[in-house]
Amino acid sequence: MNTENRKPGKGIWLAPVLLALPILAGMVFIALRFGPLIVKLINAAVKATVIV
Amino acid sequence: MKKILCWLLAFLLAGTLALFGFSFACSCAVEPGLKEGGAVASDGVQQMEMNLIRQKIDELAPVYGFSTETALKVVTPEKIAEMNRQTALWWNGILTSGQAGDAPEFKTDELASAFTADLTAAGGNEKISDEEAEALATDAANAVSESILRIVLPLRLPIIGKGLSEANARVDVGNVLRFLLGIRWAALALCALLAGLIVLLESRELRKSLPYIGSAMGAAVLVIIAGCVLYAMTGIDPLIAGASPSLAAQYGSLVNSAAIRLFIYTGLLLIGCIACLILCRRQHEAKAD
Image (cartoon, rainbow over all chains, first blue to last red; front, side):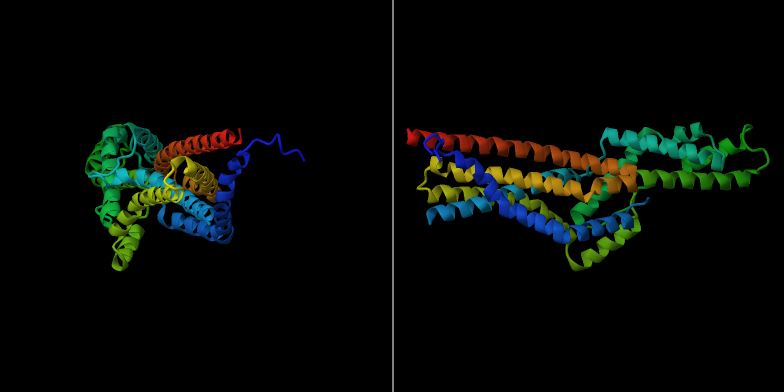
């Protein structure tokens, strides 16, 4: 593989994605684990307080 | 070791920048409600409420036998604006002291006398007596007043009042809300601290700390976008729209104001990220040359 033509510092653009990955993984985990419960709670709160 | 510590700080900075973005957007949407007099609904929302009230009056008019024109002479846009001011004060009471004050109401006296005159007039139902007309007019005025309240503030006020008093018995709701509104400044201070620590660790040279700070900004942009996608997936907006169109309009104006701020903040972060990373890349290229 020819590495001479590779521009230096190119990998820096990946850094934000790599930094965000753990937080995104945490958000996805919370969304999958507690998402349905949160939606149900919001649904119940809206039904209880809003006059349809 | 120094690099690992810097990346760890950059990771924390990314999370704090995202937290600041969310708390800034939410608190700026809620903050007008804390001012004296509260946040009155926008002209667009009031116009929509007036249209819904007209529709409701059209529905009630044949049931109670009053004319739509008579009702609309009393139910004016100015009176709906006054109802909205009362509603803003009601929200202001909840946000500042955690207690629901006097619920807004549309006075029925003027409506009842207008309806009585309408029902006893020559064009009205000739079979009913004055007493019957008065009773019917009072019922009609109450129905119209209740419909107006349901459109301007479509919430079950006793449930909210009871819930707030229960919550106030355990915690000081007003203080908790003030604490939540203060999170953005705490997050901003933490952002400055973390960025400062990165610069300190990199021998106080800003150009060396650019990749960490720029990457943290970029990561915060990704987290904010993911947060917005997750919010959209909860389906809160369609849920409220299905429950009450007028509440959806009021909630929509709050969400819009928060979304505009979040959009501007995310744009600034993105520009900062790109600028930092381009400068960093140029440094690398200069070194390589």
